[in-house]
Length: 372
Image (cartoon, rainbow, N blue to C red; front, side):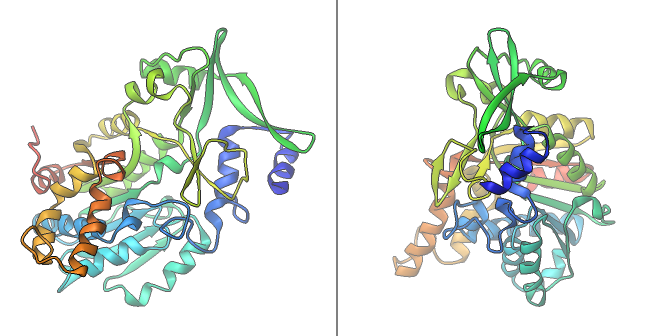
């Protein structure tokens, strides 16, 4: 913990929780996501949809194949791509000639260590591959584009607030006697207006998180996708009315993970545990509307997988309802069950699909949605 105590001391002895979270997760040397090996996956601290099972990538590949039939070969951009496994698995799932579906894949990954790991995959990719550290290094591609982001928005630094009888207070992290501690300051206008704009009123003692960074990032994501684009965001979250409902989240949604165990104290072991807070889906919807984008749907992961064709994929792979029960069939079904589990990520994770231009009709048709 010494490193972050020294960093905060150098900044005057206290920082907003948003800045503490950015240090803890993204410090170039000490941050949680700067490690040389991925922190996620079965051997890491938590599972994501793509790391829980390769069948997620197969469903994405099937969806992209349908979209490409109408729009031509696509640029596939994965923002927050980690070690690049999802992009590789999508291409491997496109049996035959992947260039009929994907013209190029683009990886956006802040971690230098993960970009190095992706460089080791370049020779195995069947289409051109570009890897960059920041989304602003890219220009919208000339062809149809699909942007994917898995559990990226809930890992963005957030402001943390608490309601008091005399008004909204923002939580800061200070240093006292060499230890991290909580401080409170009156919340600024931007935070107070955020809750007013969403019609949310916090009760005294209620904690909540505000992800202002998500607004700018999503605006950049949609702009990058261009005039014929689709965005798929896989993440944990709720609309504002539910996210800030005191009956379900008096303590906010902030959570920490290490060795697949949940913790609630973000000041413990900074840089050694994940820190996450749920997404406010209404923010991403507002950004999309202002950019002229439409929403195809917001679904639980299980429903998205069904709409993307996981049933057909199972039948094609010989592991459907009529398959003989072999060890291999049971293993594959268990992999898929992890993604569809109604008591786990199948309901906890959501997928928001947005599109612009003619892509909205294509996306709606591919996912069996009435575009209205």
